[in-house]
Image 1 (cartoon, rainbow, N blue to C red):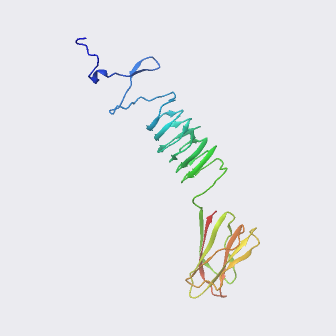
Image 2: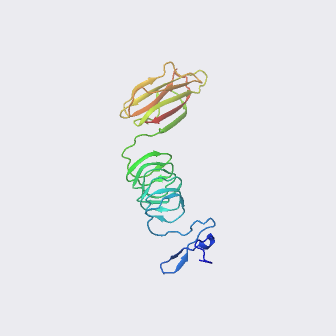
Image 3: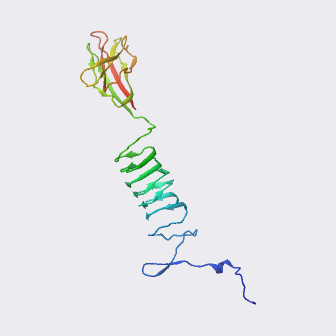
Length: 263
């Protein structure tokens, strides 16, 4: 047919606008940014078959995520669904969601009903109802029940110091330490002198905190300017260190440090 093209060779003629109706039936054009990305926010509904990859969610509520990876979440509220991979961001509120993998760098508020294989690196867990946490790095757990802990990568550590202690002719005992939950512990004793005055030290253990058993003693006394470390041989609930002058009337000044690791 003359003067009528079957094919349109100019793509500019194929452009169109996308409109949507609001609740009042008024039409509005969908807005985009300078890169052509859609700016319209979906306020309600379920995306049941859309592959989401590399999306950043800055606000709103995600009621159901069926599939995909969200690389960054800023201020969103997740009420249901399953998070299989969270790469980065902060979730301000989690209500009933299930997290199966990924890393939570900061959880500010909410309840996680099920955690399967996730790694938590920071933040506070106020309530964990069910699931398994495979790795916790720096998080604080304030409530809930831990039914099983398979491994703790870093042991707890505690220490106490008693300095400038003056020895007497009879043994003086330091306050007892409850060692029932400790795995490894020892007493570090430094004799500050004066002169050549030596100090004796011994470790005492007890099951009731009243009756004490002499467990480990220094052999020749701790010379002035020297250190000795006493490690208990016997495990009981309470452990303490006692000290005295090696020679009557020759007082020495000592510093005692207790170091311990949890199990």
